[in-house]
Structures are given as structure tokens and as C-alpha cells.
Image 1 (tube, rainbow, N blue to C red):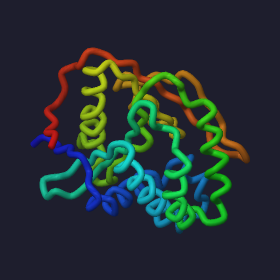
Image 2: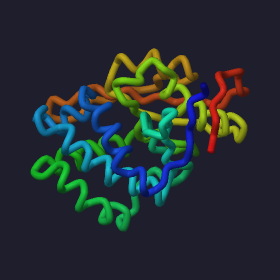
Image 3: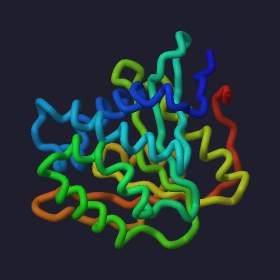
Image 4: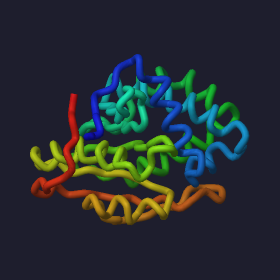
Length: 212
């Protein structure tokens, strides 16, 4: 059975945030921003609620669902030219981000400015987040989510950019054509973050993905 990837709607927000918060529980970057492991998933859920709402308005959110229609994976994308948040967008996300970070909100601001300084200026799609439920890892949900956007990017000649602080992800993304072109280290003992770029390539044969 093919993995079903579809565009998300507002009714998916809570499910998406829950999946992504769980997926990023052991992520070095999120762990640095939210060092309390006992409250990390709950706080990260609030962060991803705010980010998902933003991307539903200004970007693209895709979900991968199982046979029962349960969200098992999600991606947050920003189209070319829209990765930098406007002041209005920042203000709209602030209540949710304050619930997530509380007194740690300055760390988020520092990290965001650090990443903005090295963000590529060339037109590209920006993959801000991708994650799947632990129980379906290795079953093709992440691959299907990536291919559902990379194929149109190849068709349109569009490049793709992402960041990762998990060294275990580097080989995974490289299999999809991403290459590390730089790395940065966050302030105050923060993690190393690898910057990865994917130039468009001719679409390759891949497992069937049903797009709705």
C-alpha cells in the first residue's frame, strides 16, 4: 500500500505538532533550546503549533497518513522568497512561542538571528521541519514526505535548503541529493548545525506516493 501524502489543514494542527514534538525530542538543537527533558515534548508541541499555523498561512504543510487516516509524519515548508518572517508574522506567533519557551525565549531569538545570517540568498524552498512518529520509522513515511515536494522542485528547477543539528541525519539527506555546504555553532554551548543544499535534478523513479 502506498503512503498517502496530502496537504494539511487547520484540523491537523494538533496532530502535526504532537508528531513533530515527539520526533524532535532527542534533537540537539531543540534540546539546547528546551533543556528540561521532562517538559520538552509539551513545550515543543506549543512551538510546533505556532510554526504549523504560520506555515499553513505563509508556506506549505504536508502530512503522511496511515491506512486509518492518522497523521504519522509532517513537513513544514516555506516557498522561495518567504523564509524571513515579517514583523506581523513574528507577532502572530509570539503568544505560542512564549508558552513554549517562557524565560528561554531570548535563546530562540539568538538562534534565529544566528541562522538568518547564514541563510542562503538564492531562491529556494526551505524545509524547516520534517518528522515522523517513532512507531513508523523505517516504513517510508519520511521518504514519501520528502519526495512529494522534491519531485515538483525538480520539475520546476527549484533548489531546496535545510538545517540539521543531528549528525545522524546527514547521510539520510544526502541520499536525497542534499549536500553540506557550511556549518555553524550556536551560542552559549549550543550544538553544531549543518547547512544543506539540494540543487534540482531530473526526477528519478521512486516508490508510488499518492498525493491528495
